[in-house]
Image (cartoon, rainbow, N blue to C red; front, side, top):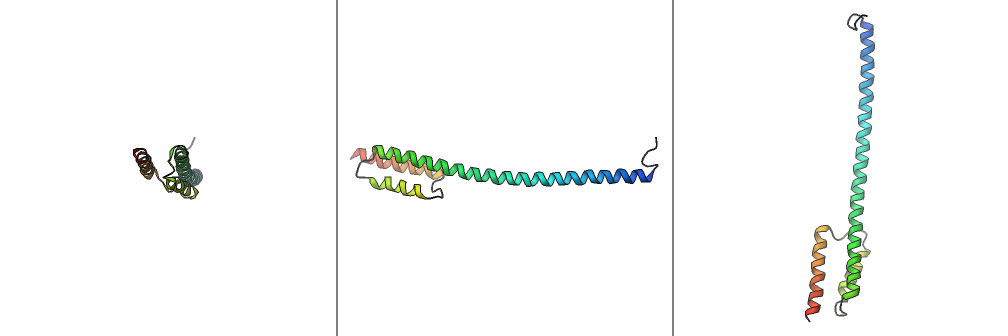
Length: 114
C-alpha cells in the first residue's frame, strides 16, 4: 500500500477532505455560538421576568398584610403599595425591597406605640 506522500493526487484528495471536515466543524461552531447567544438572551429575559414576578408577589403579600393590620390613620401606605403594583417596570429590586419592608414595619410599629 502506498503512502499519500508517494501519490500526490491522493494527498490532494485527503487535503480536500480534511478541509471539508474543518469547514463543517467551523459551521457547527458558529451555529453553536448563535444558539448559546439565543439561550443567554432567553435566560436574561427569564431572569428579568422572574424578578418582576417576585417583586409583584412581595407587593401582594405586603398589601395583604396591610389590609389586615393597618390602622385607619395610615391608608396612604396601602394606596402607595397598590399604586406601585400598577407599574409594569419593577420599582423594587432585592436591595430596595428590604428598605420598603423596613419602612412598612416602622409605620406599623409607630401605629402600635400611639
